[in-house]
Each structure stands twice: as structure tokens, then as C-alpha cells.
Length: 423
Image (cartoon, rainbow, N blue to C red; front, side, top):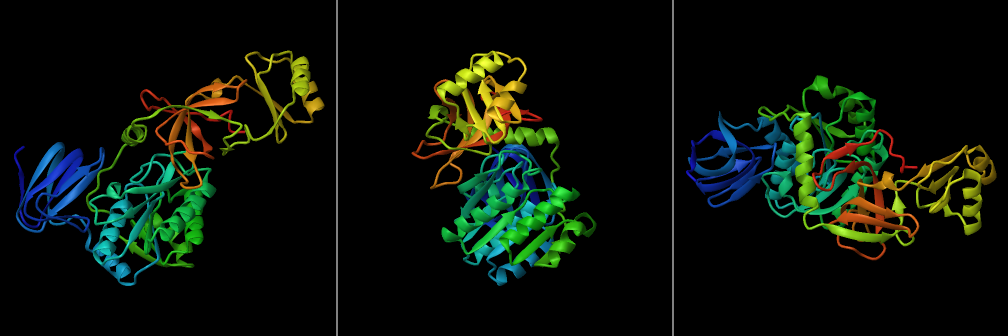
């Protein structure tokens, strides 16, 4: 492929999916120095700026590209990154709105620290547009060298929250961020950078950012954006921590909602590569994020009594909190008498179909996130769940139930307003 000549002092912006090789010269991407024969992959629906420090020739495979005069990295970013790095911080939280450039700034800060010989970990807390780890999860990686993109930071562990938005699940995002930061530090990281979700507006976004920073106790909180866009988050947080405000990215590719969905589909294909069906025995597999399969199973006599009261054949039943859950292919008659007899406020009837295609995660004591899975079958009478997953099976695995479904053939997301299995 013919090489693209980039004059000194110019930036070649490459939009993915693409692969870029430095044929000659020297370029820089968010502070990462790339010399001759270096290769970089650009993820779909993302763009990277290759700034030429001298006359350089780049081979660009696929993708599209264009030139910009000068560097697209704001000078305020470079100064902020150098100032922060000079203090050898333990933890830094980066906050910004959607498509503000917070991930790009995090990459620049990582490269500045690594360039100073610091061992750096990144917690990617953006559950919808992942750089590290699978969708619906927080991801943590340890940087062993400078990187052109956070996507190049090797994944070490993650924390499944069960949704690709933190709305309604703030507690899981906060706990996951703290757990992953602690794991990174135990793994030898001297500085942990937390790239937060692009949700800073509305009550939920403000609460999430305040709760994350209070839990993490960072040395710095960096806000990327215009003051008017982040002031409602910046002002309260500045009362607790040292804060910096840097301008938003000068050149940034805005992504549509459909492109964001397509990018997640790209990630699902990667995380389910080599997947196969496994059978999990629910009696030996704890299930998290739901009371289902965690209740007290009804005895044979109690099942027979429930069948008599409801007029249906039951394959499995359990009492969960104030709910009687039964699996049956038939619709029961009035449930009031069963509620009274079993002292519950609700009788929930499931067929098992409700579990199909539900997204799950597998965790263990060694790793908070072994991998994602998709429920492909359920045998209620045997207590067996079939899961399509690439995660390596271990003893003592924990199944974590997500709140949406995923087509295992196309990886299209199926949103459920109220998932009946999340009791």
C-alpha cells in the first residue's frame, strides 16, 4: 500500500477500523512516541491523531484519514498531564461529558506517567463505550508501555454491572471502581487512572461522580470540558479534592447512538470468540443480582399443594423473600389462596423462556470477571442452565445476571423494560 507523507508539524487523523504502520520518520499519538516500523490498530468508530514530529511516511490500511495543521492535543492537556505526573499521584479520576475527550486525556496522562517510569493501571468505568473489557462492565488494565489508545492496555480484570448504562446502578459502578483500583494496586500499580462514564448531567450523573470520587479518594480529579458544562459536578467535588479543568478536545469524532451500538457489537464478537455452550448446575452455582435461585426450594409436598391451589403442573418452585416463584407451562387460576397459604405477597409464574438470551457474567474468587455469557437454555426440573460463553470453567464460579438480552447469532442487544427474572 502506498505510504501517506505527513509533513513535520501536521497531524494525520485516522478513523477506524484501520491499521497504521510508521514506514519512516517519527510520530506521536497522545504522547506515545512511535518510530519506524511501529504499528497501531484503530478501533471502529474511533479516530487517532498521528502528529508528525518530523517528515514521516505512514501506511494506512483501511479506514479513512485527513490532515490537520499542528497538533490536535491542547497545550493545556500537556501541561496538566506534566504537572500531575510530577507529583507521582496514587489515584486520578477523569470526568467529562460524552465525546468530550476524557478518554484521550486519560491516554495522554498514562503515557506521560509511563514515560517517567511509573507503573500505571487504568480503570475504564465507561460501561457503554469500552476501551478495556466487555460492555456492561468496568474494566481494569495494567500498562506495560506507552499506548496509542486505551484499547491497547491489556485487560486484567473487570466488574460486571449488568447494563451498558450506570443509571439505576450507581452503587455497582462505585463498588466496581474501588475494587478494581485496589486490585490494580495489589498488582503493583503505582498510579491508578479512572476514566469515568460520560454522564455528568442530571441528578444521577452528578451523584455517580460524587460517589465515585468519595469512594476512590483520588489525589486529583480532572474535568475535561467547558466550565458551564461541568460546573454542577466540579463545584461540589472541588470541596473535597484537588481539581483541574482542561478544555475539551479540539478535534473529535462525534458518534451517533447507532454507531455506539455497533461498536458494542464489535466488542461482543471479540469477547465471545471461541465461545461454546456449557451446562451449569444451579445447585452448585451461586447467582448474583437477583433473588431467583437463591430462595428456599419447596418440598415435594409443598409443590403438590401449590399445584392443587393454582391448578397447574409445576417443574420447580421456590419461596424468595415475599414472592412464590413457580416454573410452569400453564397459566394458573386465581393466586390469592396460594398467597395466603404460603404467606407471600406475590406469586410469580415463569416458563423458563424469560431466561433465554439473558446476558450474564461469570466471576470467581480469582477474577471478578472471567467473561460474559448468554443463556441459551434452562431445564427447570433438573436445575440446569445452558450458557454460551468463552470463559474458562472453574470450580466455585458465580453467575451474575444482567438486565438485558443479547442475540448470540448477531449480538444485537434486546432491551427489556422490566426483566421478569430480576426478582
